[in-house]
Image 1 (cartoon, rainbow, N blue to C red):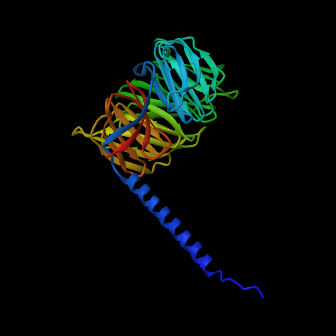
Image 2 (tube, rainbow, N blue to C red):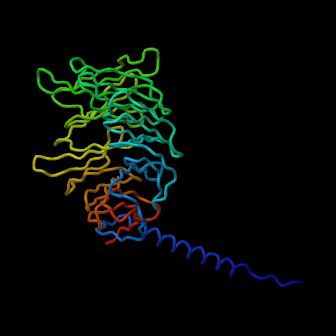
Image 3 (cartoon, rainbow, N blue to C red):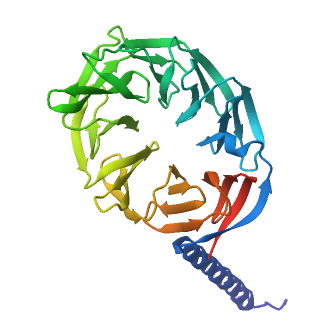
Length: 374
């Protein structure tokens, strides 16, 4: 009769192996959490790739890469500075906007608007008057404010560049358009107007029907008293109106109803947003600055005092990234100050890349991969 061997040693070896793997995983997780909770004050450059005329380009995050634009054209490049595609163009003052899967680059003071998806150009529109501002719906419809003396124009173009709507404003009636936004499907145009009144400077926000038989018809109107409605935008189809010291969130697209008004203790100096969150930098009477982040339902996600006044502030990968000159500051949306310090050179763009504490940074030297360090 064959001898039967015990399986207990094998089981003990397997249990010991699982225990070791579990301990290693726990240690790695602990190290990872500690790194995420740290505040760093210096950066280490891992590698740098050449980038022609780095200071002469504009940059904006798009489709997980970087949309680069200048007077000679537009390109989409990766974190190593390699172009995925490029589009030639002649512009004097290019300005970019990104929403969802689309990006637009307009020639401010000129008449060209180029619309892109991640694969390249999908449309080109040419306005009849000089462009002041451009914005996008998540579906790629562009809203363009155009100069026209006392009768400025707000136009809407499809992602392919065809004219959908041309609204003629009047300084004496509606006021001057200073901000425009489109609902996600591009069917509703929201415009903020500056209009002096007997009580001083005031404003008015109007929503227009864009695509139906009743296009250009007013769907909604809201007066702003004592403040200028400086910016309007949509957060996942939630209409938002920002004035000098207030932010009002609405419900509904075709018939918006006021849901919540956020009142700030200081004047709003900067407004920024993505498709989910909106951010504000306010200045107090004592001269200090506060950074506040809100979700589209009006709930506060972050409230921090910041030491400096940063020229550039963006959302990226659940972080708020601020930079100006060589100075930078980063927060997570959970309120952790990830970085506050100086880069080695003047910074023109910062974006998180794959890996822990890794960022792509554009400086005069080119585009670098850097690590946050103590």
